Length: 264
Image (cartoon, rainbow, N blue to C red; front, side, top):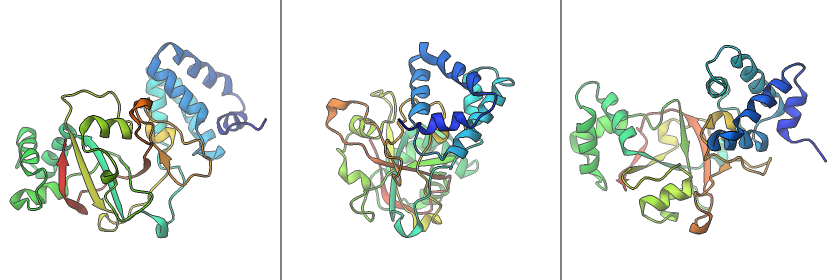
């Protein structure tokens, strides 16, 4: 039986393989970290050379970081955007993401450069949800970052020109579930943002990897080693919701945002 990508990467190490195995094995008593270790073992998006480099960095961080989890996160942050890039001619024209309203209110507050508090930003986001005209608020919204450090995005694989959320139920819990966003809490409002890839400076779109996901246990590696993009893992298999395409890109402002945005 051929080696997995993880095993092939470990085979490229001369002295640290057992140290790394031991670190991941120690995570089995923690349900979330145990899943992260499973994701590492099942990763297919990283080329062996990139995988080996990530593991070597992890091994070096184990001696200097507070915990193995801290070491893993620190290593991941040095090895992001290593998944294959979708060729520019095949990039989706329209992308979208769902993120916590609280997080985006933070982004709008920072973009306002002191003109808005977080609570004011949140109030105006709620007011303008579903609106095509944002008046004075629009510059602050368009200057807000789509994500911190990197942006997770989805798209419609059947029609790259359409809103990917038109394929999903228009309800908060179903959006959480389909995109595998994590533990659902009924009081966690979501904002759904749709943007033009071209009008957002056409950043490279990468297939996600374990390094992009860090210690997020709801990420799942796509099993197809040749896939151009990743797939989400719906939180509930009984929901009937299908996995959705996912890519990562460098952080960008929302200047390519298409109105209206919506809050659920």
